[in-house]
Length: 253
Length: 253
DNA sequence: GCTGTTATGCGTAGACCATACGCAGAACTA
DNA sequence: TAGTTCTGCGTATGGTCTACGCATAACAGC
Image (spheres, each protein chain N blue to C red):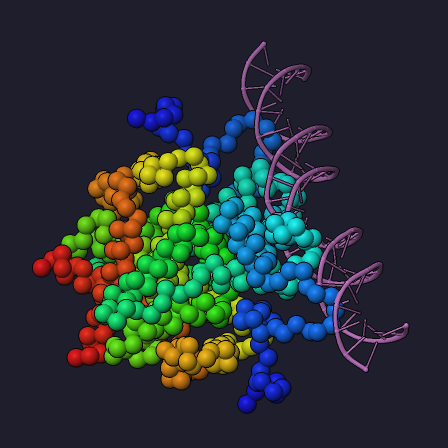
């Protein structure tokens, strides 16, 4: 079966073993002065305070009062540290759906929970994700999402696709609003003035003859009003859940 | 009205003026040896060949037989170059919907067009997007999307939200499949063996008591079969369009 | 045609970054 | 006590972007 036949099947990449706490410490040698969770927590602290761009190995080491290269005894590379940061950054999953919730209420709460995490820690969006979920907390989120769909008639593969769809949407929406916030801070414009400023820029660039539909949108004042980003989020989420509902009804009937 | 009152309203950021070709060259001084499009094309060539990580100022300069710092006479920063790369990387928009297409057929073709571009140039996904669309080609795409919804009863704001929803989905799905491709190349595993390998890893890590729903998905063999990623894409797209259709019908009826 | 102005090309250098390597010393085993 | 192995970390390499300044080329006006 397994290509590598030790006693426990194929070997896992060291980064993943680290994420699951499966690395046993050898009994010899000096006692370690730090630990992986200590380092990851420090890195998360830096990201929370100054953004992901501020997370360098030397900065994290400084946060811990250690030398830069000392970190490399615990994490194999910066990418590995980033992966562990994402895991702890997301935090524990929101828990299984309440018994009285139907699938739609459950998934709505699930989506809002991720939404809240990403609003609080927008640096999570800047970490280049490098593969499907594999760390413990991420799989916890996935598990809780799947449980929301437990009673439905969807096939298992369809459940996965649905969750992928929703989590993608949540990330996307969070990326957009965080860009507005970051652009606002970078340019010194008030956050609620960003979209109007964008609309003004568009109307200066757009030739109504070449962009008639876009011109109509601008004329309708869509961008000049600053609507609540949470309403925008809720709109898209309801569209997606409507689509899922249509599928469930088709599978049921 | 405008804060800056020269003859043409508020000033545009230089990066955007460059994207729209609005920078007039002063008559004095030596004739420039390159041009912004030349540089952007070279950068796109590098990204096509060796990925976005290979795009450094020195590499692009080498591609042109110029010195690194010569580029800074044309682009203000690397970020500006990246923005221009995205604009030309996307290429011209797919054009307005065919007359016989209803909104759904039109948006489907629109989404597949972006899908194809992102499949061909997956480095576009790695460019950190820094704001709403503002470059000419990007607005061309937006315009064509809006035209697909022209006959519908949706409000202008709802049209924008719908397109945002779809384009976000396309990017997300493309990101996922490109990650599989890149991971496959990095680890030397065949592309159609990536998902089974992932499934095997999960089943080694997951405790069925703590992750029952996830365990059920794995047991159903969802991840061991390699399904066509295009089918997966079509599934999610249809879900979203179902949701949009439900909204249109509600607005109509 | 000459001079002053202005833009270009680009060399140098600074401030970061990740990380490969090697060494001194600590903590364990035998 | 001797040997082994692991930790902390100093040093060094090669990469990144880009600020600055200088020589030169091309034009404007006299």
